[in-house]
Image 1 (spheres, rainbow, N blue to C red):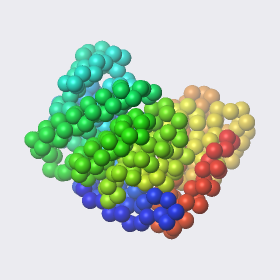
Image 2 (cartoon, rainbow, N blue to C red):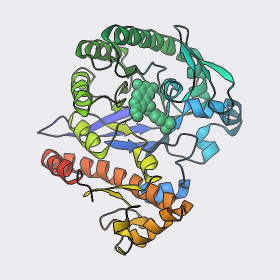
Image 3 (spheres, protein in one colour):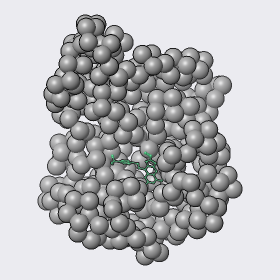
Image 4 (cartoon, helix red, strand yellow):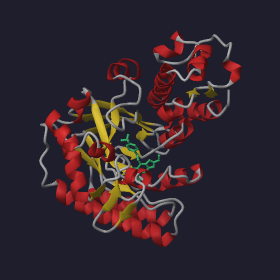
Length: 376
Ligand SMILES: CNc1nc2c(CCc3ccc(C(F)(F)F)cc3)c3[nH]c(N)nc(=O)c3cc2[nH]1
C-alpha cells in the first residue's frame, strides 16, 4: 500500500491524500459504506459503483465467518470474487462485533469465546485465528484483533484493556508474518489505538501503535456513547502522535458533523452504519439538515428529494412519493433512502477533499456544521 499526501489545510490538521492498493486508488478523506454481510443493504453492486461510487467498502469478519463461512469464501477465491466487487474492501477484525452483537461472550487473555447470534453455536476468536480468517476473506485492508474498551469504564479497566489489546496486537503481527497472501494481491494490516477517554492512556496506546510502523493506523474505542467533545479531544491527542505520512482511520464515526470535525483533526478514513441504518428508518441527511420523510409535512411536497443531491434518486423521485413508500412499507422506499444517504456521505467527504485542496476547508467546515444541524 502507498499513501500520498497531496495537500494540508493551512487553518486545521485536515489533509487530502491518495491510498493506492492492488484494487485501485482510495482518495481521502473517504467514507466507507458498511457492507456487513457482503452487501450494502438494499443496494446492487452496479448501483453502488454508478451512483455512489465508493473506492472502498467494509466487510465484517464476525458475520462472514458465521455466514457464508470461510470455507465458501475460500472456494469463491475470496470476498471480492464472491460479491463481484473489484474495488477495495476493508474488514474489521470481529472484536467489536462480538462485543456488540453476541449475546454472551467471555473475554480472556487467550481470546474471546462467543455464542453465534444466528444459531446459538459457540465459537472462539483469537488474534491468531482472526488473522487466518481475514487472510481467507481477502480484504485489502485488515484490522488488528482488539478489545473495544466499553464506555464508560474506570481507569483501571481501561488500562488493563489497553495492555491486553497491545499484547493481542503483538500476537496478530507474529502470526500474520507466517501467513502468505492467498489470492495474489497484497493485504495491509492496521493496528488500533485504544485507551478509552483517558488522555495518558491514549498517548501510551498511540505511541505503542506508532512504534509498529504499519502502513496505516486506526483509532478505536470511540463513538461508543462518549460525548462528541470527548471523541474530539481523544482524536486530537492521538493524531498528534500517529505518523503524519500514514492514513488514519477513526472507527465507527459518525454523523456528518462528527466527520467534518474529525477531518479537521487529521482523520482520513471513516465508517458508520448511520447513513444506511437511518435510511431504513426514513431519516435523510442533507446539506441543510436532516429530514424525517415519514413526517406528514412531506405528504403533498412534490419537490425532488434533494435538489442538491448527487444520485439519481434525488431528482427522479419526490418527497411525497418517498413518504408514501415508507407509509406503505414498500421495500423500494428503504432502497431509495439508502442510496440518497450514502450519496450524501460520499458528497460530504469529496467536497471536503476539494475544499482542502482549494485551501478554504476550515471556513467551509464552519458553515456546513451550522447548516447541517438544522431539522427540516
Ligand atoms: C459505531 N461505533 C464504533 N464502531 C466501532 C468499531 C467497528 C467499526 C466497523 C467496522 C466494520 C463494519 C462492517 F460490518 F461493515 F464490516 C462495521 C463496523 C470498532 N472496531 C474495532 N475493531 N475496534 C474498535 O475499537 C471499534 C470501535 C467502534 N466504535
